[in-house]
Image (cartoon, rainbow over all chains, first blue to last red; front, side):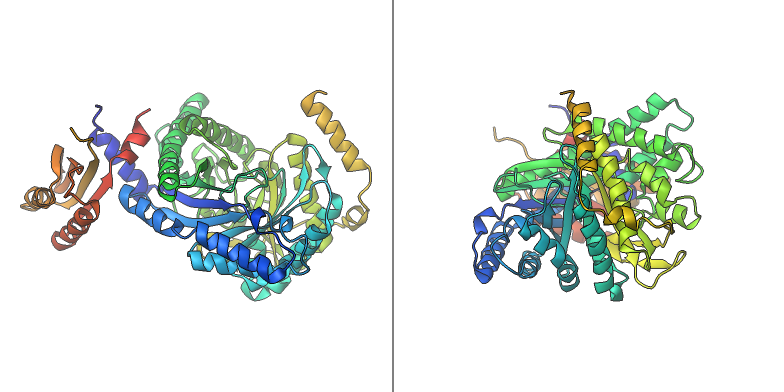
Length: 459
Length: 93
């Protein structure tokens, strides 16, 4: 039997102690489809009972794994079936929002995701009621996260949903104005949303999933940064190899934790998602990795290419390390959650336009960006439309999580606290997009998507 | 023979007398069997990695952890016990 050697042990300890290697989340996905009824109170009770029963031991098991293996597990979370799929027969979906939040508190988890609707092709009455209730739901709950999928490569972009989401983001900011628009930090607008993402705020348990599954999200931008410090001035392939090897090590930790969690909870293993998810702590930054590659500041020309290299190598390293890689896997670029991004934005090096370009190659999209509080809903919808178009045409997941911080102007700082961090308000174009957004859903974007489908499938 | 269940005990801190003696006494009292020890001192910094079999019926990971944590606090060094799978997962294919 191979005995682990001292240097390998010290390397792992060093990653945990000094490079912020952590398991960001164990996320339990729970299907709510069996809860359906047309009685509002019974629906809420069914949902609360099911979640609290299934997730009864989630936090306890998470702590045990953390203790046994000595690796930090930062969050325990729950994702559920998109709520619009189970609220079709009731009038007030916001009651379900409260039930979900209560269940999260009883289970002791950090977040619950899935106050969601999938409207990339069309909007049902239930979807519309749910979307309209999002501002209220996010202002009245503490742990609830919401997401709406407005486009897909196959179906195109639902521009009615885009317009509606522009208004919803704006209204959510206003209803949570006392907390700097915090509600918007828990609201994601997707194109090509994935069904097994364990990361918040966009986690939901897709309708194609089973009754219950545990997935794990691993992180560790600091580990990659330190590894790259060892290959200064080395050729690109050495940089890519180093990232792949590091991603492999990190993902193996995720795989171990996921397997153990699945065994101890007696719930099927879902996926491991290796996403370099930064936190506002020093040494836990994706921007710092890009700068380590040779850029003066994140946002300099070359940033998109560096990010593409990083994302590609992370995915390739991760795939080899786990039997089930899924979720979003890649590099996240949430501005307020990354100290390097925050500093780059403060210096003016990182603009919304540059961030948009970066989302063509990162694993998600425009994330945790504070914009002026007086940004019109139509402009927010137009930002969503641009981002969804990038996702639709390039067959990738994109998302928008922007915070039009109430009463704040360019240069002001918005504080969200904890893992959500803080962000300087950055400018959006003050040009008018309203007439474009006001158009009814017609033929252009749907025919455009047919064209894209032809392009992608070759049929 | 019972299957082995391995734990890695790592000790880091300022060197002082009796660290190994006290750690190994706790392991002995908890019925853990030491498989491998490596220890170095670099400019006064004591570092020890100890691998032990904790498969014996009387050996409880929790009890070991509690006692080792207490010892670490008492003598002012960092003592950690972790199941070995984390290192194996990370470094072996």
